[in-house]
Image (cartoon, rainbow, N blue to C red; front, side, top):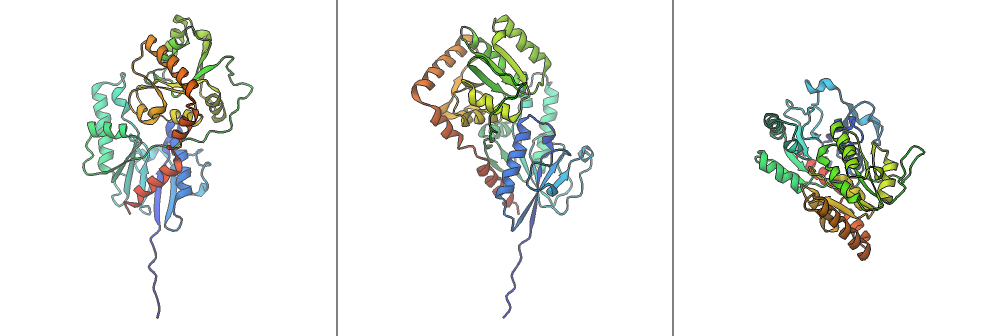
Length: 361
């Protein structure tokens, strides 16, 4: 008697890393970390993973041969993708989605709709952005939101119809060994640290009054995205008489970032426009006291181990910081904070994403 074993079809998945052309951003680290852990968790017996990535950003994965090279011309005509089964678009405003190949199942990650709260964008432009995201949603078979807040925003403004939807929190980036180099800025006093793109939505200026009457510094790292806001921060620090204790670093390396997170007295993130807030989780893994805006996704991520600014008046900011530091130091919150950081795990996230892919086979 001869038994015939039915072979399983090898499924081929493309993970879009096009946003990695912008280093020092949250989307860069999202793509790199999730991509690495997808490689670690994929079932090699039935799945193959490919990365759609820019030239010069293809050396971070285990196998460089599984990269498809992104080309700006693909905005107009995507390459042949008939051999693939799943395309995962990792950015909700992507211009690199296979719109015509209906055989290809599409997963779309939605991080935020922050453009709706951008004061520089007109109402007409916001509506055009919404219409474009709607077009991508219509092409997709499954939607992944990085927070409940992001899902609620999409439900409020867009039509998801009968699309399957999942909330999958980001993982915690692994911090390199903390170290500064000879050119790094080394604070001479205890310091509050924050990191993120330097623009008005991050709301950094509200932290400056905390420095008054305190022998401490405010150190902010991140890519400069708005020169007007950068100059406003510097001018405001002079007006408040705290410019000697305020330092904008610009972009920093991963070891530098790790050093500032490990050695700061507190981490502050008063952003008013976040779909998740990855720096919060990074600071959380170091057990640092967390001072956050109570807006958008930050309460969902910070949970009950963070201290929240309900408004941004100077008196309230100083009061929250004073009582938060007193409570943190008196009650041994460090371990509680580190324990919560374990919830945000790239291994866990990768396994959840793989289940989303498999639901479409």
